[in-house]
Image (cartoon, rainbow, N blue to C red):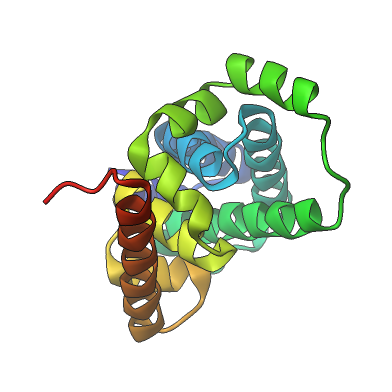
Length: 180
């Protein structure tokens, strides 16, 4: 459905193209926020990352040469924004434990990931592995779609998935939470 809206929007005047942009975002926005939340593990950062992706997409919407690629293009913007935020975290200081506990109790992503066995196991992954796992299992994207969004080869996606799942399995076994 989204591809049909984009194709139609490409041949319309600017005002109608804006409606096409809005239609795409209506379809993708909730999913984009959930994916950003699982990548970042923080609802406030997910909101910011999603908003920044929307702003960047809007600013360059008129320059999109292939309207059929709008979904993948938007997701690349979102994933790159999340990756930048993950890198920036490594350069910032450590939060106070009391502050972190307060945030965890109020943040649905932090609380969900902390309660969830899989969420806890994801903490053992590097950024690229985490993004790949989230896009595959929370974003429900195929390997070629993930490769497109991350601008890597499908083999790289498969390798990252394999390494991530192996790492998570080892972490679960170490914690005694793996199921046979």
